[in-house]
Length: 194
Image (cartoon, rainbow, N blue to C red; front, side, top):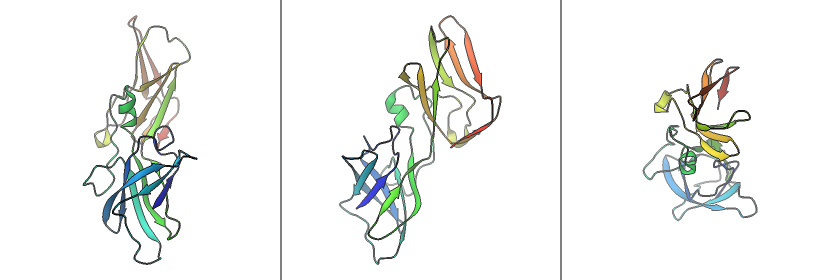
């Protein structure tokens, strides 16, 4: 049994995560995820066919979600172009506990996101808003150049993007209105989305 903790899925808990892959000594096994009721940001991982320590020495473990049977390593970061539906926003997430040293008697893994979360809060001129898009994105690894974000309500939009550097002056938010107007927000300063 291993314990997983930290912000894990898009809402910072393990809700909806049923299994993760655990790689140890060259073998990948699926582990079931059981939420910790006192702290939904933590979970317990169990398996009907678990990895076993052959001695009490520290081991190196890699684990990830989402997991597809047959995978031998975490998949590359590839987000969806249309994240307007919550399932597609959540389906763009990738978390990994990469090459972590685990101690016998204290098998804890710390998962981190491989995607960057971008949140847009529109504060002015939202009447007649037809669409919001993230634009000018890196297409490295087959990622989309544009993303339609998830509408959280209250003029707040969010999307998961592949890690990338964004240079100052990049037009990265485009808002289109029902009156035909288009507003573009350009990045003021260079930034790294990790």
